Amino acid sequence: MKNEFYQHYKERVVPALQKAHGYKNVHQIPKIEKVVVNTSVGSQQDVKQALEDAKAELALITGQKPAETRAKKSIANFKLRKEQAIGAKVTLRGDQMYEFLERLIKAGLPRIRDFRGVSPRAFDGNGNYTLGVSDQSIFPEVELDKIKRNIGFDVTICTSARTNEEAKALLSEMGMPFSDRAKKPAPQAEAA
Image (tube, rainbow, N blue to C red):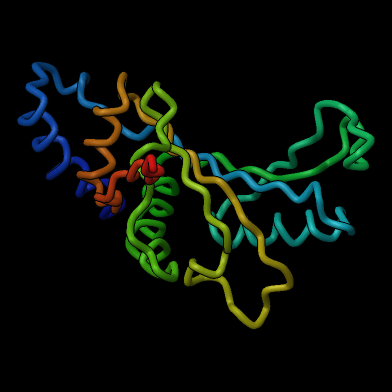
């Protein structure tokens, strides 16, 4: 049985995008290919324990065992050695990906304090969107009294869209709450 969020994509999002952008072939319609959830604990004092905590939280949130990420080079100022484990990541595809996105959009993002929408400027130019989450407690699976330390992570949504506009249309139809407010220019100092 397919996920509800996937059914929403097939039944509502695909026809809406096809009508709005005039796609002739259903294979031209952008789709979400994968979601990568990444965290780093390189600046913590006790890196090994922080990494174990981060991996446990990621596994709880995503439902999949995370892979360790390692430092590519040594940096003495950060007390970082080459090949030292400093983070964890999970790549989600298929049903797990749609389930995670549904929980993120419908349950996680609305729980952020003073939430006014996600930035519409976080696209990479190739139709991929990255969202930073500063605290894992926005997910309902995480028990607040068992949190040892705040773990922030990045969520990258990789789409098959060719442009940022196509990707934004896809994510908007999926329910991603983009903020409407554009950045206001900095106030100009008046000449005397």
